[in-house]
Image 1 (tube, rainbow, N blue to C red):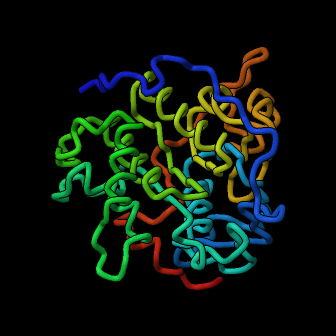
Image 2 (cartoon, rainbow, N blue to C red; image 1 turned 135 degrees about the vertical axis):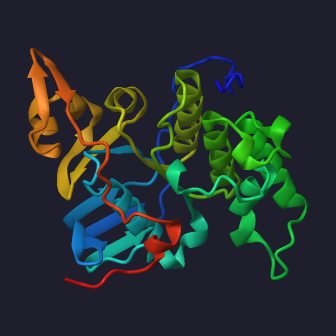
Length: 296
């Protein structure tokens, strides 16, 4: 079913103006990985990763399936522990700042049959802010209502999440992240499998969050969309093979290194050949990503 929700910005596609200076806690990077190696069971998914992302950045992580994109997000979110190296997020360990991070998983990892409404999903973003009785107050309800309104989903707030279209589901989970009032957004394939108008709407929202000084990091397979909507790209295939402006996406050498040579270059154009059935994370439910694997 096509997602016919109107554009949240009235169809205006121009990126929002960015502030002269992006807020940062004493210049501390929002994300910093040093010498990080991690994986599942006995298999390393990423090796010797060094990565520093300033606060307020709008970053796309690209690379082949199985290259470690999802693993990087889970390390930053604190859902996976490194075998070696250090991960610092918002000036502390991921576990210390979890309430300041909003993580949106891939759609395939969500149990869409679970009996929760769109409102319930968005309210999950407020959990870290609820009191000891975990009862939402007026401020929590206002935050959820505002978030759903921003993504165009307030009118279906009582609908069970599994009854929504793919684009509406992505909007609901983005509302959860917005309701959390997080400083760091981590999104795993946020626009995969949705129609172009929905992609544009979601990316406009993420750009607006970045313009407010929040850090947005998303994995993607859509290099054309990444070049249009992001400011910086990071190419990952077990290691970091590219890190810089979106113009890197038009460099055949960069693409060849990142995708392991699986690039057919035609004139000035690179066409990617990738195995869509290989994933870097373990098969199964989300719980696996909370279990550190044995060290090598």
